Image (cartoon, rainbow, N blue to C red; front, side, top):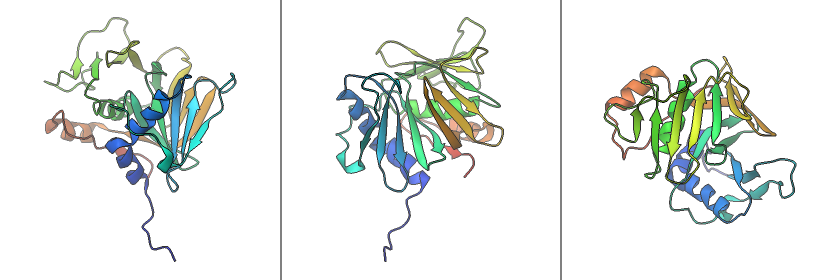
Amino acid sequence: MNDSPAITIADVVQWLHDDGLARLAGIASARSNPLVAYTVEVQTGTVTAFPVSASDAGSNALTLAVDDLPEPADTPRRLVAVGVTTAESVLVVDLAVANTVAINGDQPQSSARAWALQLLLNPEITLTTNCAYLAIAGQPRLRHTFIPGGRTIVTVDDSRPPITSIILNHSENLTDHLDLGVDGTAEMYLGSRFWKLRSVLRMHDETWTELVAGMTVTRHPEHVMEGD
């Protein structure tokens, strides 16, 4: 009988934030065609890496055991954990590849906050937003400023162009978008690829207020997983 404790979603997310995101970034650095997303199976740790297109030559997904992952890249780049798929895998998206992405639905700022705090794990990243309830007062790496265009937006800059734009409730149908359901589920569209999520990483107002009140730039983010 195997008495090892069961691996939880929280375990996988913690591993991602410790060095897992940087190890996934290491996969991309060894490939010529860009990888837009990854899934990490909760129970086995198996990683599947997905190129941008599902139909072009060289678009086959790459599957690796967790023990076969490369050494971590120097930073986690712009990788963020988005949520848990219906196949019980944690979905990770590379916002350097999906660099214009919308979050649509009720309270999209809750997912944007979870993404922002993960992006701050990379010391090279600076975030700018025109939305006061997404910024952190006195925090130069997540600052509030005027951005023309009339849309609620967060920009992500790590000095590796192009800059990423995360747009909340975009009125047009962008190719890359996360659609939040009222029941805590979601759908992630990245070009021709699609994932159904049974829960997403979100941070609602009360938790955000408490976290920001005592946050420092070196503190790891804490997330509320909706739907668990």
